[in-house]
Image: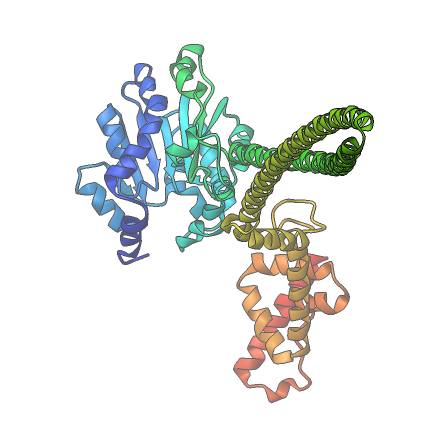
Amino acid sequence: MTDNFYRAFEDRYRGSRELIKSRLEVYLPFTIPLLKSYPSAGTIDLGCGRGEWLELLTQAGFKPIGIDLDQDMLESCLERGLHVEHGDAVAYLTDLPDQSQVVVSAFHVIEHIPFEALRIIVREAMRVLKPGGLLILETPNPENLIVGSCNFYLDPTHQKPIPPLQLEFLVEYEGFAKVKTLRLQESKELVSRSEVSLYEALHGASLDYAVVAQKNGNEEVIGLAKEAFDNDYGLPRDVLLNRWDERFNLILTKITKASDLVAQANERAGIAEAQAAQASERAGIAEAQAAQASERAGIAEAQAAQASERAGIAEAQAAQASERAGIAEAQAAQASERAGIAEAQAAQASERAGIAEAQAAQASERAGIAESRADQANQTTMEISQQFNAVINSRSWRLTKPLRLAGKFARWFVRGSKAWLTFAPGSRPRRVCRKALVWLMNKVRENPKLKTKSVIWLNKHPSLKQRLKRIAFAQPPAASDFLVTDIRTENISDLSPRARQIYLRLNAALEKVNKDSK
């Protein structure tokens, strides 16, 4: 970019110089120990930008050089007296002599270049580094779904995200002895928290990551940065997902236990209801017994009345006859005694009725306690059900729906491919593009004027022409004829002298091409 757009873009979205310097300090434990073995060795920072890393290396005692194509960025470095040069980073690295550098770094550069250029950087860094030297490559972390699906494409110069495993394999493949992946800029609070929400599990992973690779050397040099390589850095996505799984399983366990408690409470309530029914039945029996006792007391009272009546008769008879009166008195005494016995029996029946009523009251009280426990169990069930519905209707559950749909589409799109990359050989996108190209060549062949102009233009680009020929020769003759046939016209005399000269030269050139291709 020729204007200051990218510098303004970096100032807004990259962060302040102080913030970036504080983030870059994580690499100092890897680099500073190398000063013991290489006190005057050079370091190079590819795509140095505003120069925050150059400033840290200078303060640590190194003599770094920064390379960048953006002149506005370099002006920011020059204002601070940093050593920078304007140029292409890959070309500059390629021109450096063997084993001339102790550190080669590139922060947020590799996502701007094609994969082949990245391979050149890693290969050339292996060549120019001294034994035990370091290669540091930092880039956005696609393990974080916000970064991989949205924030990465905020920068218009980004090409495609680079997964950590791919970058680790590349540096190992090129021969680096030690490789360490640093995951960076995650939430400090999230690192120490054991319980995470689904949103945090999907979007809380490290925003950036870096691969620090060390070239092989003697044990003394390799051991200088051993402590830094042994440490762990950042929060991987798998750790967060495992924490979410543990929390979700705990919720399911609680729901299961609550359901068991509800079932037990319902069972106890049923038992209490059965006991209350039994108590009510016993109270009914007691009431029936009390009624029978009352009936017997009434009979006793009637018998006492009859006895009294007989006593009156006896008194009348006694008045009539002294002898019969004595007999009547004796009979009245006996009747009175029997009446006393009847009254005692009625008192006992009344006492038993009171005991039965007390037992019925106790049974009613126990039934009330059972109903209260059943109400508490129902309330607990409603609270647990509300918690479960809150999980299902939560924002995190809704946010995952587009991700599930995107996953289905992605699996369909790459189905049948033998490689993970979308445009790898054999993939559906590559087959579709090849068919479209063959169709276009057939259409150009059907138009003589367009075919003539196309052949003239392709002769100026031999590499493109050879590639199209390889594609065409793999298809039916209609497509391959587009590149190897002669240009013909029905009447050459209709052409102007200049057109006839061009026509003859083109036919001669095409005949030579046909011979070479055979």
